[in-house]
Length: 208
Image (tube, rainbow, N blue to C red; front, side, top):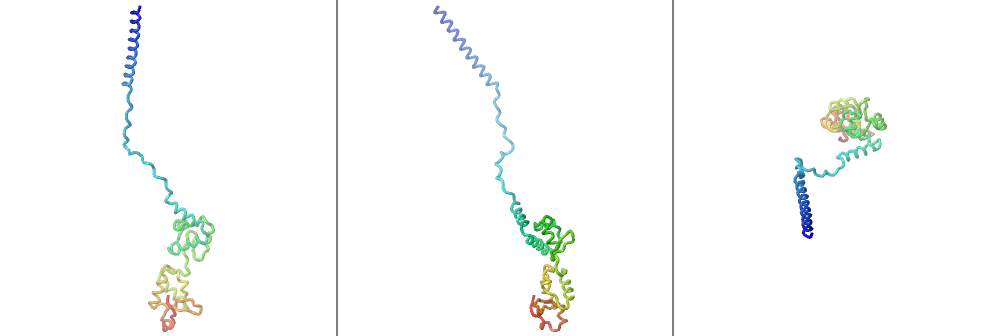
């Protein structure tokens, strides 16, 4: 009996060992058959860098400037427009004025009406332009105008005729075409011709 028991235990041990070997073999085969995950393919594109911090628009300062202009008093906006008209001597539509100096003429009724009625502004129904007291554009037209005023014409009324009018007045005076003098009201006057008044030096009281 003792021998038989030993044989039975030996068989059981053999069966356990065989079972363990079978399990190990099965696990080994399973690990070989399962494909390993392939390494991630290298991207042909460089890795994305962190985006730059968001900055305020480059137009922010300009928009603030435009806003401050449009919130300015009506008189200040009108002056801005008239200065542009005076400097350029061109006719501007409301849209062109907006582009040139940021004053929204169409969007501000008070500015529009103020410009339309201003004595220094001409409005033809479409465009605004500068309106000088005397419509002359060069030295020849200036001399023709002076000759029309036998008693003289006030220099102050000619200063805004065109950009370099004061230089042309000097040239006419120095060239002997016109005489600068004054009357009791102390307004300087340009007289028609020096030759029409005898000796020029006797009548000339100042210079431009």
